[in-house]
Amino acid sequence: MDLNIHFINAFTDVIFKGNSAAVVITDTWLTDGLMQSIATENNLSETAFIVRNENDIYDIRWFSPLTEIDFCGHATLASAFVLLNQISNVDVITFNAKAVGDVKVTREDNGYMQMDFPVRKPAGVSEIPQALIDGLSIEPLEVLLSEQAYFVIYPNEADVLAVKQNSEQLKKLAPYDVVVTAAGQKYDFISRYFWPANGGDEDPVTGSIHAGLAPFWADRLGKTKLSAYQASIRGGEIFCQVEGNRVFVSGQAIKYLTGSIEI
Image 1 (tube, rainbow, N blue to C red):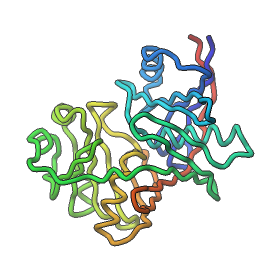
Image 2 (cartoon, helix red, strand yellow):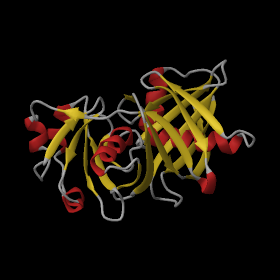
Image 3 (cartoon, rainbow, N blue to C red):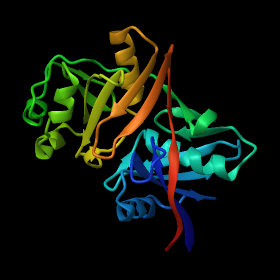
Image 4 (cartoon, rainbow, N blue to C red):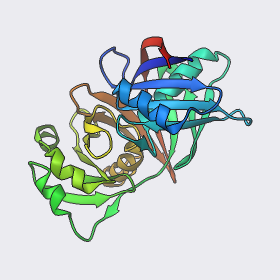
């Protein structure tokens, strides 16, 4: 069996930047074990698997090299990029994922695509886990928690850029990951994302966490349209808009390769 596969760099228009995702489109679902094996072999942040259903909606599942992921933004952006380039007369792609329901991705001007996410705003915690304190080289100013990750708030951009993680400590926070963030200088806010329990040491650009970061910073900064930068080695730009219980997350993407898998 041969499967077509696409490697796409998301949240960038430059090769070797942003976050890489693999996209595999099939007529019917592969087995869970096979999808995990493909994702492990790809060794990218996520591999997205897509099956078009009878309602012209694309069911989507995401796998990191370690496990299936409930919600992934950059691989959704990458998947939309592939489909929108295959179907020239369509400007909106609708995906369905078990954890977040329908996610619409709209083709915008200048190569951007806009994803429509539910708000996943973090809330305060009654106690900060010791593993979180021990897992970061800089003490948090404030800690919150969403259904996805602990949010570590720092007083300035320099702390986000300088902080080092202890992966063995942060693994103890499973199933939660860790995002560190601060108000930015060039951008409204910046962040970095650590996820040793679910995928790897540091994710290059994490679209899903901006469903929590954007409403958090919208409240703090008193604005609904925000620019963001995820300050990993590869880096990526994200543009967000908060409207009620929805967060619109926009970015670009670029193709790295198209190939085939022989199973």
